[in-house]
Image 1 (cartoon, rainbow, N blue to C red):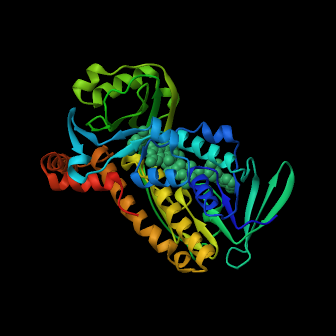
Image 2 (cartoon, helix red, strand yellow; image 1 turned 120 degrees about the vertical axis):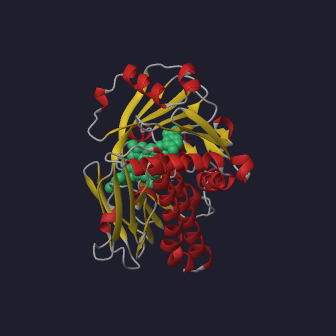
Image 3 (tube, rainbow, N blue to C red; image 1 turned 180 degrees about the vertical axis):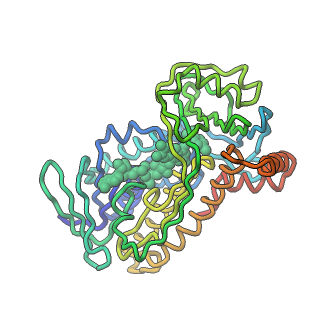
Length: 389
Ligand code: FAS
Ligand code: PHB
């Protein structure tokens, strides 16, 4: 078998890239380790930057998002049960789209089905060959049979635990990491959201986030200890703790209900450099991870895909390799700024074990400065909305 681009990973990065390439007449084969049902059962991100919204439209997969997505022109920050609003519209003239990653992934799957493009699920033992030559290839096992695809390029969109990053020789790879000493316990409930916009709450008991997926589907998070197990958290315990951490008005009005999904995610900041080795390119979580406090994970996958799509279009349409040469440095420049913002938001809003009294005063001063300063709020707003591609 032969194709122009092999895409490893059928999450948002791989699916979006495949769709954009197709619309430029560039063929791809997409390999996914799990079944479609498994991929679509994952509850992940919820906030789309305008750059991702535009890319979904460009990919011909933005119609349902346009219809069902919720346009948000601000967020609330809360400091010890007292909230204040960051007005994106007034400060930066922008907004974000609240639309679940699960729905976005489904839309991209359906778009790929419509273009009748090759997408192979439940592939095992994926291996990358000769990525540092002009004739790379990918082999894999499916239904017990080994197969091999010759190609021009390989897009490693296979997430943090994928095979792509591990294929780059360790002598060439530099990894940067910070693991946080807590996790996020997430709950999805078929209840009306407690607020019209997201609430990021800093509290002495720990961080809390009130988010949503639709007018009837809410998503909430609590900072929990790393050793916590999801079985320890009954629905009642979750709601009682959330009420204590969010602004009093929200705590009094929140509609609670059964958790239809409950999980604990660890938090880390991670970047691998470079994001390219020969004809292998890393995109999305395969190259970097952010703590979800800045809502950047999915959105960084989108900007990586944009840069790689642009580079491959330049190569195939104009025979120009400049975009390919520039890909890693261009993508990393935006990645590191989003890493900084995500780390800053996490440091600002969470309680860390062994935090000194001075550290706590710094957090309080930062939150009070944010509440009182248009300049500080403008900086937060432009990062949350998403820095330019
Ligand atoms: P993904 O991990 O989504 O997709 C990679 C795909 O590659 C997977 O489908 C995997 O099965 C497949 N794969 C892996 N190895 C393979 C192999 N060897 N062969 C073939 N396929 C292989 N971001 C936010 O912005 N906000 C959030 O609230 C948020 N919450 C998150 C919660 C959790 C538990 C996790 C893990 C991440 C969360 N993220 C969040 C980040 C998340 O949204 C990612 O940034 C986003 O999924 C990145 O997309 P991809 O790069 O496509 O990686
Ligand atoms: C979500 O809705 O899942 C969500 C929203 C914003 C974040 C993190 C998660 O910063």
